Amino acid sequence: MSNIACALTIAGTDPSGGAGIQADLKTFQELKCYGMSIITSVVAQNTTGVQSVHHIPLQMIDDQIDAVFSDIPVGAFKTGMIATVDMMQLIAEKISNNPAPYVMDPVMVATSGDSLIAENARQFLRDHLLPLTALVTPNIPEAEFLTNVKIQTLEDMQTAAELLVHHYHAGAALVKGGHLSGEAVDFLYDGKEMHRFASERIATKNTHGTGCTYSAAITGYLSQGFSLMDAVKQAKYFVTQAIRHSFDIGHGAGPTNHWAIREEVFNNE
Ligand SMILES: Nc1ncnc2c1ncn2[C@@H]1O[C@H](COP(=O)(O)OP(=O)(O)O)[C@@H](O)[C@H]1O
Ligand SMILES: Cc1ncc(COP(=O)(O)OP(=O)(O)O)c(N)n1
Image 1 (spheres, rainbow, N blue to C red):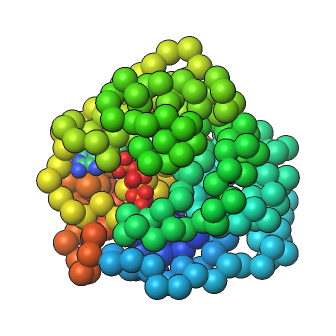
Image 2 (image 1 turned 135 degrees about the vertical axis):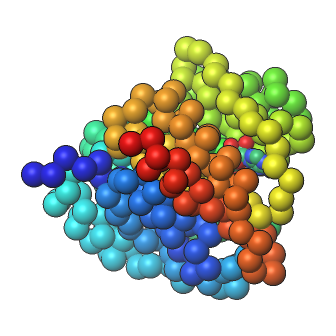
């Protein structure tokens, strides 16, 4: 039996390669994890926005999950876009007995402004999936929706992180500050302590898929046995480098560069 770390993503697709399943698998690969994927929706999108969405039938999502869970031990898994309440119900049922750490990127709206999940699914996500998580990774608008706290300051971010754990029963919460100004600061609250992760703000419009990449990197590191704190620390470095070396391709918000740390990783071996 191989002892390679196996990481799984349950999410929607991005044929232009910057976000969703494609970003997750590229990230897993860069971290030398064995990447696996379950597709919830096929999304026609690119750097400028979402053109159309096709939801995968429930039975097919069910079959994909069974195919993976019945065969391969999952070290850690994440969810991204889960568009409907029916899909959420099914996924909650399927993952509730899996002991691997669950990282939720509570995807609601794309960088382009297009909505990716049904209105009633947002509340279901908070009430039924959040309590199953080891970690939830909302950006500011997502944290505002989930907690009903208006977030304008670093203190507000910390309040939201605490509420997500103590009131909404997330295992831990990482509230990301990409949508504020100044340094790019994120707060991780693990139920006991608040940890701050900061980097310089990089001047770029090319941030398509940053949330997907960050949560996939955390999942990848968790699958390798890193502690939550170390997984977030390493992933923050990964996503910062991916933004720093992002690509100016396409006509809108370009994608991050998943291989930005490859040379450094290889050189450190
Ligand atoms: N311009 C930027 N420069 C550096 N880091 C950034 C920048 N924008 C976002 N980040 C970081 O990228 C990660 C994802 O952030 P955020 O944009 O808040 O989430 P999302 O991509 O889900 O909207 C966070 O670590 C955040 O601090
Ligand atoms: C299929 C799919 N999942 C997630 C997203 C969100 O990605 P993006 O629009 O780049 O926003 P962040 O990852 O930065 O929150 C998507 N567009 N498509």
